[in-house]
Length: 141
Image 1 (cartoon, helix red, strand yellow):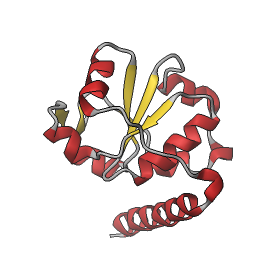
Image 2: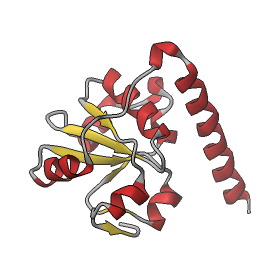
Image 3: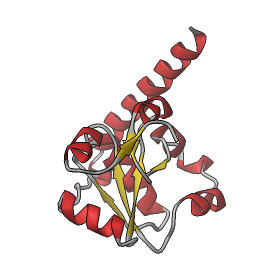
Image 4: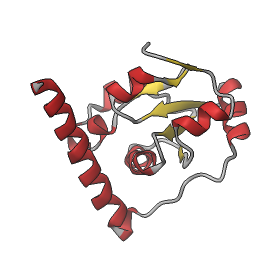
């Protein structure tokens, strides 16, 4: 029960941070105009990778096969991010498509990753839309 409460607190804090970040004009950004077929093609051609910024429990319930998990809770504190670890997880030479459930966290995390020098295209469509568009999915990893 304590673990569940801790997870709920982290998700709640992430939501508060996300709301704050999206409200700031200096952080205003837009979702990519790339269509899901374009995204799928870029990923298949190894020009891009998918980054799931949902929390681990959401990931375990289902995610796009081949996607990388990096929850918003690990990205939201930019000053604590280990750049070397980040560069081992995410390739600098590929487009990073961020996705979440409905696009908000993807946008906020995309902005953070851009500050670290990544080319990011945040997706408005969430996991359910990716699944409906034919992206192969799996549970756990």
